[in-house]
Length: 337
Length: 254
Image (tube, rainbow over the protein chains, first blue to last red):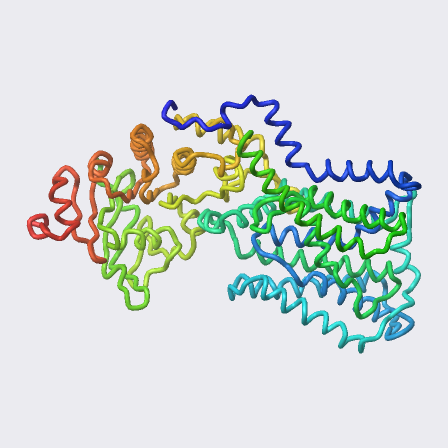
């Protein structure tokens, strides 16, 4: 006992350490609340329930994409295909039942379109996962190929045309607001709650962190590393497809370039949310705050009537700030915790 | 020691990596409750041999018998199932998670709810704390991420894992590489304690002193073959050094 080297962590008292640790773990939330407070004070008409609900609703699509992307990154990989999977899944669903444009106007039920979309996402995820795990190709390359190819596949499917005019019960999913809360927001929050639970409380989640931290150790411990990684890619694909299906409902159809740029918004949200690109760290709660932060700034720019180009600049700045903040956090942690 | 049936028998095993013959023809056995020190110079084939017993490599020829049965150990998971626990030289820890997660890696206690395995964190924490106390290790908080721990503390977790999960056979690959004098002494005591539970141990080491202190038998590898296999009581450190370097092979065998 006496020979064990005394680290700095033994010296600091426990309670302030716990508080510092908590604040560092949830720094993005702190920033989000400060930003919202500043907006509320500075921008006329900003502080109202409607605006906050809108922030959440706007966050739905990038929000759901970010969940899958986060898991892929936590497991030490990445998934660039999500944006194209989302767009294709929207196109697939819209094309089948859409009345106008390139739509086929088939008489199939809305749940079936959801099922088909999700199945498509699962197949893409399975393919990505298989290539990454079994053929040991870098996830960056595999999913980049899928990103490019599937966007093209969507164009092939629709002939480059748009689809609009979805059945009422499909469209209604995006517009319904039971008790004043949009269904989209309920689904977004539910997704985060469910996947946070998976990541923090179940062995599946634990294994994702272990694999992202040092893949050799869980392999030697007899954990089915390959199966876990493939499952992560499948879930990422399914979540992207789900986001796409909701996006079709929201936009009452699908266009050839639907959702372009959302991949980088998702990346921004994930990094701002404190998920390190090296894998094995981060929490979905942080990612959620990151998504809301981006959405809040978006909304603020809208409310102020500024040109949307500002958003790009701000996003870039935020990503950089997030990375700087991350190294700053490490410094604090090493010094005080 | 009572002469029991061998727990593990390795028969004429060989392994090549391209043109390099890491192991030519190796046979040896381990009985329950026996400590075998595996010695040999760098490149003698010790790590390759251990990897085949622990399931990370497959032999090109020869066979492994476990509890008398010919066994294919095709993955670390299979090895665990058989009761073979390995502590690697380069430590099998994930620095990004806490001590509890590392201690229970692959063996998490959980409730099954609707097919989901929900972890019982409190129980795991309590058990980890108890296990670390048992081996006399001092880690301030088992909720600290391993990246914030010292080399010695990390090794302590690794050693604690094998003491706790023992199984039937424990393989230790250079277990004391990162340990100080006092911790090494405690590590050697742990080996004794595990052995008393009837668990067999294979200890790879460069340290002749350690080998003679804990081992019942020394097996010396040289250039991919067994250059010597002796009870520690019937040989000397000097003779073993000779076997390792190849000088005294004749005398040692005779």
